[in-house]
Image (cartoon, rainbow, N blue to C red; front, side, top):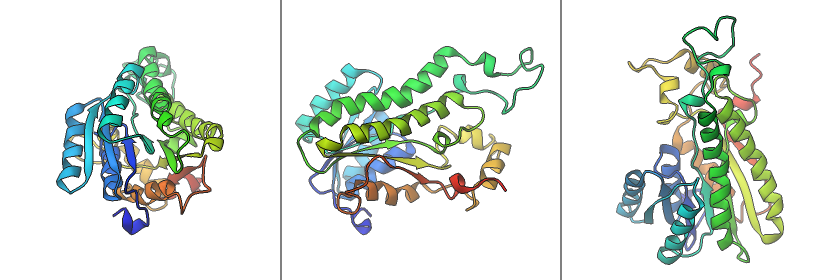
Length: 282
């Protein structure tokens, strides 16, 4: 698949955080198909092992590691193992992130009476929940970059790819912490691209539109499998009229990591959203 997009990563070492999940697990497999040796990092070691096992079963090279992207000691320990097992990191995909119910309001709009009602209003958002979401996304991108980008200094053709979101451009209702954290990721992507520009490291980000994952499934579908009202609103605001298929992120992933095709591209946040960010609603 990778070579079909014109990206040959043979000999490269790719580190993917959050790689036990749906999208980042696919990223890990795609990078392996393009020839990279992949370090599959996730807090859920069992999920990481499954992805690494699927890669090796398909003839690729991968190894799973338990890593907490919010703990520098954990990342340094994993970094040491990756250096020993696979070699220095050429590509870092910062995929770990997500939302949490404690940082989510029940309703889209505040109305009089919500404070007394059995609902989670803006005023009820849990501080620890908000901190967790922001840290998981922003700090969980900053710390792996600090650890693994050290391998990239003085070496040509290295890349950092962050995962932003549509709500970084315009915040989505109900999820203020996640929206703010992803906006921070986009800003950090630009900052890091400038910071590392003289060191030869390109830094870009993907901004996926709406893809069904384990984390958002309950927001998009009821227990009986029927669509929620939120799904109807999303599809009405997506000109292509459907959710994205995970595989439709692969072209953008491999393009941004291709040093020949995208060698002069850095600091870009690329939407892959079926037109969502282009549509005003009218």
